[in-house]
Amino acid sequence: METYRDSVFRQNRVTRRTGCRSLDDLLARRFSRSRSKDRPALDGSAIPVFSTPEYRLVSIGAVHYDTIAHAVTKIHRETSTPARFSARPGGVATNIARAVSQLGVETTLIGAVGGDGAAHLLEDQLTREGLRLNLVQRLDHSTGQYLAFHDPGGELAAACVDDRVLSEAPDNLFDTLLDKETKVSNEKTLWFLDANLPEAMLQHTIERIGGQFVIANAVSDAKAPRLRPVLKGLDCLTLNKSEAASLLNRPTETPAEALAQALIDSGLKSFILTDGGGELRVFSGETLRSFAPHTAEIVDVTGAGDALTAGMIAALARGYDLLDATRFGLSAAALTLRSTGALAGDLSWQNLEIFDQSDKL
Image (tube, rainbow, N blue to C red; front, top):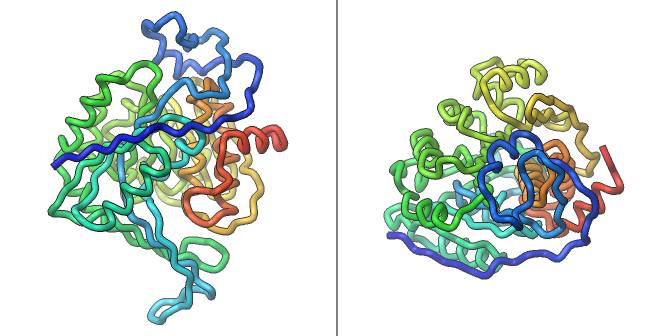
């Protein structure tokens, strides 16, 4: 049974930036088809950078109910540990959608939920936050659940997930919703997929929305290999070092430099490769560049990688090229690290602009 809940998009008002920049060749190639005369030039010529987004996002993937335990003392096996518990929406696609929406970009979330109370709680909260929801309700399944345990310093000690509502879904689960979105989609739409989608569904979805600009995230070491058949169909991939090793079937100790080169050799058009607190590497067109992450007090690592992706997407939606957009992703990650949960309360485009101006890379 398919249910649809649409809400009014919420957009933040932010301070206008001035000047002109060029989108990289990657975006230009994808978006250089015919456009209306008021469409910004994305074919390599100088275009304005907008404080108000010119593009919307469709995010497809996991919709989870997350429970996070923040331990008061170091977590040990085979014994209980005092902790503070919190619960909130989760799943990579959901985290991205929430953050991008909070950064002022019109966002639609496509996913699957069960026929339980968690589904209603998630729908209510996500709608209040300004997301447009296109969810498939699978009454014979439970809504996805994620349980994480964090040590006192915020580091992830262990995590478990039950995502059968999506992992056991048929490839065509979202066909009706995808057709609905592609009918209203245009060159001002960015698409995001997470590797929580089963491998066959990833392939089917990319074929179904054919020709769109697609950004993907590897999610985890276990799920990254699902992306192997679709790498050349992606326009941008975000992943960490261990996920890259898993995707490429390389040893986990493989240096980041070697992994970056292997990703380039795989045919990826562009990617952002992170390495914990170390440098991240961004490849776009024929350029490979390293960035140092911002220094931040770590309160909770939950969602920092997703925040980086969301900040990058929000900047792409405003006309920045991928290399420049990465700066805003780094700022979003830093704000998230010093907060509890996957969505920082002070995450806004205006704060990212302030952060970017005060700490240029």
